[in-house]
Structures are given as structure tokens and as C-alpha cells.
Length: 148
Image 1 (tube, rainbow, N blue to C red):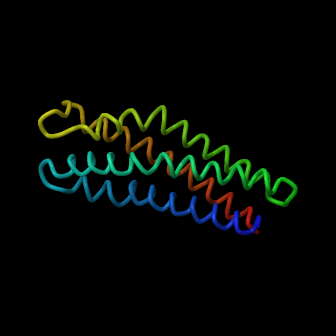
Image 2 (cartoon, one colour):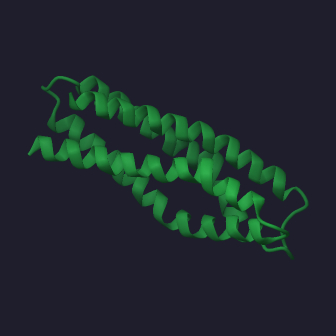
């Protein structure tokens, strides 16, 4: 049963990492290259859509890693799993303190109501997001290493 938990957890965290990596290095570039107001509207829609899904995914991933750490506490690699959990906690804290406030504002913006500094706010969100992606990639790498 522990092996199944390890694999499911690693896959769930890995897919989350893939989505966030894609947002950082693919979707943002596509949206930023769109003409006129299309990019800003796309970012707002993405914020609404992913803003509804990602909190559940982040917390669910953290819960799965926590269960793995507890269930496998006497197995090799538990320290790696606990460290991965710590990194996922850091990613949630970063999200709540740094990214979510900007995203919550951004998902309500339209060309008619966006603030003058909307591009700077979006750039700040992207910089924080790059750091968060690095943190969750590190957590994923630790989980993969703990499997062996």
C-alpha cells in the first residue's frame, strides 16, 4: 500500500509541477505576445480558472506527502519526503503571501478597470512564480529520489 501511495503522490506532485512550469515558461510568453488587450484578458481568465483549481492541488499534494511521511516513517528516504513537505509548505506560504494577492486583483481586471501599473504587477507575479516553480521542482526531485 505504501508503494501505491508513493507513486500516486509523486505523480500528483509531478503533474502540478508540469502545470506550473507550463504557466511560467509557456503560457505567460504566449499571453504576453498577444496583440492589444488579449494578453491581459487571457491572464485574467487564467487567474480565474487556475485560481479555482491550484489551491486544492497544492493542499492535496501537501496532504499526500504528509501521509507518505507518516506512513513511511520507518523507511529509507523519509527525510527526503519530510524535506519535500517543507518545500511544499513554503510554496503554499509564498502563494498566500506573495502570489495570491496579485492574482486576485489581476483576475478582475478588464481593459476598462485595470490599474496603470498592471504590467508591473503582472511582472512581479511572474518573478515570484519563477521562484515558486523552483521550490516545487526541488520538492518533486526529493520525492523522486525518495522512491529509490
